[in-house]
Amino acid sequence: MSKTAVTAEQCQTISAPETFAGGLKAGVPIAVGYIPIAVAFGLMAKAAEIPNHITILMSLAVFAGVSQFVGVGLMAAGVAPWEIIMTTFIINLRHLLMSASISRRIHPGVSKKLLSVLAFGITDETFSVASFRKERQINAEFVLGLNLLAFSAWNVGTWAGIFLATGLPELVKSSMGIALYAMFIGLLVPTLKKSAPVLTIVLLALIIHSVLYWVPLFSFLSTGWKIIITTIVAAAAGAAVFPGGVGE
Amino acid sequence: MDNLWLVVLAMGAVTYIPRMLPLVMLNNIELPPHINSFLQFIPFAALSASFSPEPSIPPATWNRRLRAAWLPPRWHFCG
Image (cartoon, rainbow over all chains, first blue to last red; front, side, top):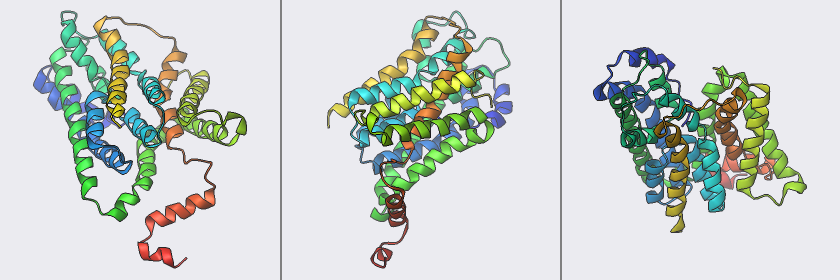
């Protein structure tokens, strides 16, 4: 999911009680942040001529913003299914860390069934709200409420985006390609401004991707593999130089 | 393209597995800091890679495309 700034709201959310309702309440700032991004996702998918049911299913089944934007872009570019799935896996692998961190703080008595439901809702934002809680142990009901509201907002936003795009005049639809770049800037710039490592990685990825495009030696690589290779090389080089991570 | 259904379901599966395994196994795996920051950087690198304007299109063409998208239709016939 994108790096929406939730820090300002975290002060409020910390005080929400450890109940399902408290989780819903703590999820409000996330929901407010998700809706515009999800609307943009719906618009973009529609502009890329992805069938509505595919876009809706993606928000229901994947629920991870960055990978959905990238996935829709790759689908529109006609990239092979395996490359799309592989790229999605790589982009979302980071949730492993968040899941591991939450596992340390969730009540040990929680059933595996409930845990497997909670796991579905782990995103950058729900994770950061849940892990900023004062209490050492996080209540499962709280996380359920938090994730449910975030998930609902993401899906409602997606439908709204598709619906809006359907009503747009042809001229506006044809300029949606530009909105893609605006979206890219909107997703990245807030973090870029705060994090020198992220700025470096973004520039590095742009350079590597351009090299893969321009140098004839790499012309055998498909679009999907160029993105996978760029992602891994840029993130690995970044990690070698900045072991401290994003470090906002 | 009916196989888009399957692609999206597979995208969902490969996203869910890393989310689910540590939590359900109650396994607090500790990864070295380099791996940690590698995983953190991935979405940024992937976004830049996939939204970088295709460099195979010469910048001049790209600008013309941008203008064509922004300007009202009648302007197209002036240039």
